[in-house]
Image (tube, rainbow, N blue to C red; front, side, top):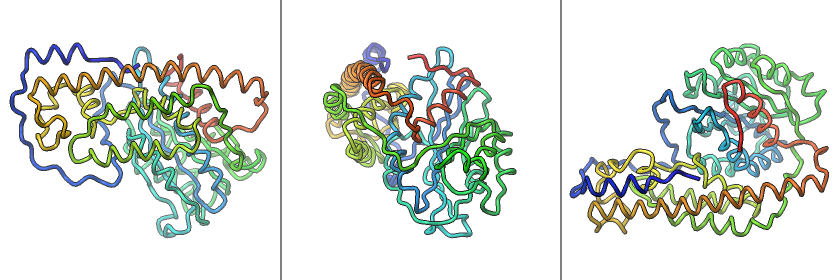
Length: 392
């Protein structure tokens, strides 16, 4: 459960009245997608950086559907990670490659999102993806991710690229024998997921690509449907997820876009099972919206952040409050959010146990793994190298 800072906030009410709030300069217009700026690195806070490179050529609709369906289960797995007593933060970047509509001089690849902690933005961009036949240049998209992203310089952080596709790894003018070793030289592991059979993945360079960067080579059937097992907890989890939204207090230039993205990502869940996975992710520490939500902002940066916010940028319900009332109102919403998150996490653990039993009953262990399952396997294995564990 998110740790509550209610006692700290109420104590601050007595020592700072916040009678008048500073008036900063006008804020810029909100972007279409909020990509929260990466905070300065702190030695005590471990980090997981995951760059997802997806083939969006004509035959990859199934791969994209798997990524959409399993994003929140991947996030929930990462939320379990610990490095000693610390919980790492998560940053995700997203690239597409192999799309005919992208100019050839750009190697038919595109950075969709730089590293961001805005998980709603990642979800919405995944759901926008469409396939369009083109040339799949694996070496070039890996080079673009290695050179074009703000990678951590700390050896203790987990830095990963996962690339998925179905054409030879050798295509294009950028040799993967050059771009992949450059990744591992910077401490970035490259994992390859070939959409096809193992023999073809080996013969077309996908296994070698992973081996050159200490990564995992795996195969999937990109057309396999992700099975969503209904669970008794699903309906309540969906209801709690919507109720959780009522604790968000949008402020500043990003408020409207942030609320819209949250609502849209809720609505995008294709099944009750995916909505339940999203509810669990929203209840975790990885779901952080401090750029537009006052509860997250105060929790992460302290009550002092209120003094930097123009009164007109506050939620309407708070504009007529004095400083003490504002602090207490935020504290009340934080407590409500913590209570809801605790209930969601309890239900999610019960749901996980139910699904594990159901899978065992159905004897699904022999089935081919999907994109999300193979990625989770790679994360768990490689996390050990930097001292991360996944004890629940």
